[in-house]
Length: 169
Image (cartoon, rainbow, N blue to C red):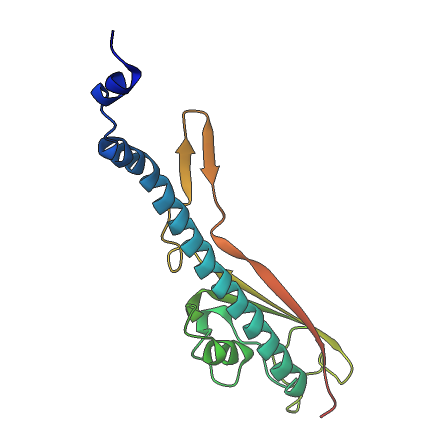
C-alpha cells in the first residue's frame, strides 16, 4: 500500500504552463479594456475642450455683439467673423475644421456698424458641434459581437449649447 505522502509526491505540482495559458486567455481582454479607456479619455478631453471653447465664444460675443457670424465655406479664413474667432480660439487638442458653430440670433450683416438682432439685453445662444470621426477615434465604431449583435458607436460628440446676455456697448 502506498502511503498518502508518497502518492502526493508522485503527482506533479508544477503550474508554470497553467499560468501561461491563463495569461494568454486574459491578456486580450485586458488590452481591449485599456484601449477603450484611452479612447474614452481622449473623447472626454475633446468634449471638455468644446465646452470651454463654447463658453469663451459666449463671453466674446456678449462683449462684441457687432460681429457677423460668417459663412460655413469660409469658416476659418474670413477675418472679423465669429467663425474666425472660433478657429483662432480652438485648443490644439481638437481639429478646428471639424467644429460647427451655430449662433442665435444670427447676424449675417451689419447696419451702420451694428448688428440689429443683437441689442443689449438680448439672449444669445451659442452651440458648438464637433465631428470626432477620423481625427480622435482610433477604435472601430461599427462591429459585430457574434452573428446576432451589431454594435454601432456614435462618432460625433454631443453638441454643447451656452446662453449669454448681450452687454451694453
